[in-house]
Image 1 (cartoon, rainbow, N blue to C red):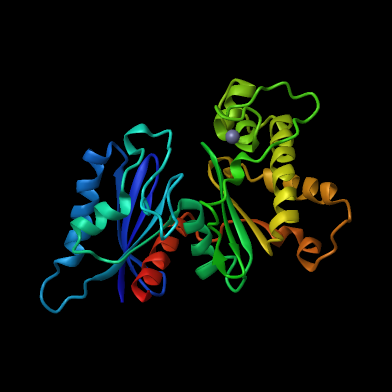
Image 2: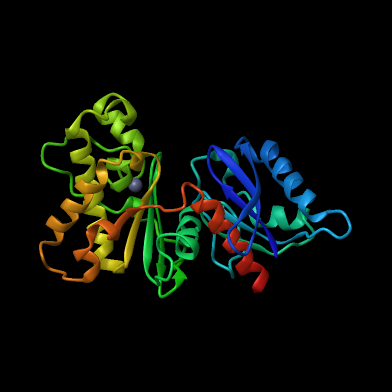
Length: 299
Ligand SMILES: [Zn+2]
């Protein structure tokens, strides 16, 4: 079977075609402009995968892993819409409806970008075989996808664990980058917060251990809350900030310090495998979108 996949991000839209084994057969990247600029190019890509020559296989469904917040509630009137995003031209944009209307009512699977990445990792990557896992992206913003009992968590909307409240680390006077909450997790630990606090982008701060020590403390604080609330079997960390690989050992150390022996599980005893980078080399999002398409086709 062939499926279409769209990883819809704030800077680029990746369109791909693949199969049920997670193989990406072809892929294009389109810069994210306004919906009027961007959607016709996306539709043109998938249209060509529907109107194939006689005897060739066409795509059966499309999966979309989308920047948010998004409406993932199946019974909602605005299901499939992008909601109150800071990317103003995309606010309230009906992503699923636009694709279905333009593409012969093809089944469209839809979820957050972070749930998509988690689904990719849970299907083909480092969380394969697990029923409970989380995926954090720590970059321009912070988002979390979560799976519980084998299902991606949505709830009343979807988790927004990038905005959980943080206790500022003593000595850190930074007021926080989040316009809504100031010192929430994203406000204290996203890429722009690092740049605002230290006066330079993270990639120019690699040689300053105090930067990454503080960053790891905030990340560990958030992960500790998630460990207690969702009890994930694995925590996957991705996004631009996590390109600073020196963060991983620090985060693991501070998580164990925070837990302070209160939990004794085989996962925490194997902390290097428990808190881990993504395994799909940057393809976890588009592969997750492929899986969303397969799930939509089966529905
Ligand atoms: Zn916030």
